[in-house]
Image (cartoon, rainbow, N blue to C red; front, side):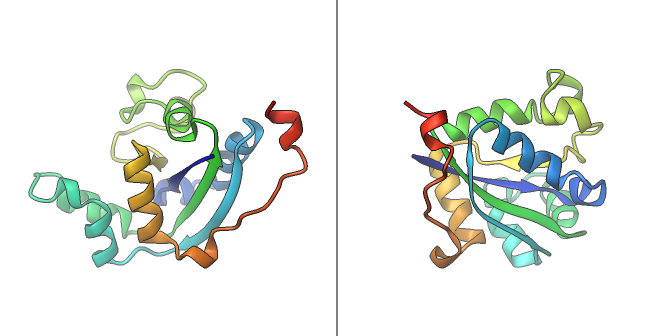
Length: 149
């Protein structure tokens, strides 16, 4: 099974959408293996957004993600990285399909509710940034036989 990193950003937390985001992934059949609320400090934000360092919007990204609490999680399932990216919708909410998280709740690209890893490699890097191994639970869901052949 593949794992991915998902974060409900400060706007999603402030708007009370953490439960809705988690529920969508669980209803899809994915397994939540870690979840925590935290306030991201600047050094972690800079490491998280390292690939954007030097770009004109880098400082805005760091300022925003450190502006309030976030809900960080690790989700497991088959093809979970790509599927969750589809469920989130386009980064620009105006271009996100109706029914996606951003298409339903997003208004502005700078306040687009949720972040999800864009590849298995990014997922591994981001999971390691936000979680220690002991926080990642390995368990059998009772529903698994009803979800997977």
